[in-house]
Length: 221
Length: 364
Image 1 (cartoon, one colour):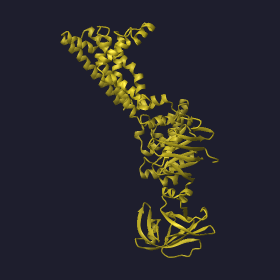
Image 2 (cartoon, each protein chain N blue to C red):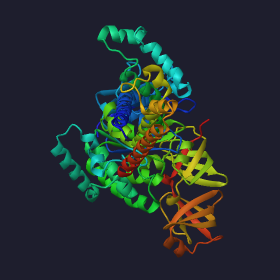
Image 3 (cartoon, each protein chain N blue to C red):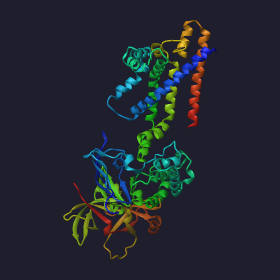
């Protein structure tokens, strides 16, 4: 593989990991909130969170573009306040990947939290634990397998994302092009060998991710 | 113990569920058993005391502390109440070792003191060898001890035990009953224990609170409650073997003569309201003596001719169903049965002391 191809792989991995780090805190909070609390408008939030799963990715990308463009509400504010541009930069890639992976993660983590018997959390409270301690010492460790599986799903989704990424980040070689976009581009250009090489790399990364997560789960069982 | 430590007066109703009421509940020191059939609200009351459920209305006070007061919108969360709580299947944290389970509530202690407290308490309970094991690697009895260790490690002011033997097999259960009483005595922490098992209540409790249909209906010393139930419902929950409707014929010198069918019985009438006519006559099987030949007795005894209808072994004891004009159950030892050569159809003489015939006024 050429150095350009390695650079491409490195970039794709970096944005996928960055999107994971970005989605974990809100994803865990949201999953816990949905699993443990009843509040008004919960159904609305549930639907909104799951929306990117069912909407065509290009539509999600379009919505993000409309929000984060330099002359748009959120993007305009970010630009004027921080000189921070999002669309058609690597940040837009991370934004697209986070938005697309969040629903998968939240669904998996929520199920995992719901499977933890509240009895353990209640006992922890009678032993003097506050809500943060209950979450980090009881709920999260007991839901570990499901949360890990959700993380893996989110990571796989982030690596394979195409539609939203191309809408909001475009295809700027060396700046916003990800593996998936590059494969599409290679086929467009009739470079079949290049496309297959990149596809092989994708397969290897996917295999490694599943393998590592299996090992992690086995060790902590 | 002087005065109640815990006073509770509250109502709790789950959506679509029955209303559970703790009415003027006053718990002192020692071991108090919450006794009742399943669905009578025992566990709900316990969970309300621990702060795991919030009643709709009422008050809960522990000494000078108000734990719950619906009028003043006071609700102390479990974290603040510091109550030791042991649930039915012990609820040991499955991902933590025995030592880390026990030290979970000792967060505020310095590490060294925490470790020594854990070792000390595990040694006291005889499970110090299992410190590094996971709960899944322990037997039911060992889990019970670790759960008790975890609940008492932070020296709570009150200990709540929900059916502590429910998850154990029968032989282990009877072996651990006596041990648990010893341990709870040594601890000296006021304890409330939920059970539906009469033997557990008798073996463990100083006092018993009987629950029926979501309401505490009788509270007193265990033997007193079981021998002198205040209502038919309590007599049935306490599993009094013989309960027959009867009619008071006369009362004299603290003794009542009662007619049960054609049979006349003499009963102690100390707590019987005057002018009571219709009553339930309660006789515990262990208070019924049987003989083959009549002996002379000076104490006021009820002597009845009876026929044995059935003999059934119950562990070391024998349950004898009799007909003495009404159905009556007696409980004998196997040697007692052999001595009398009891079998179906045997004619015997039944003796019941007057104080052991308990009368419950008929309530409409």
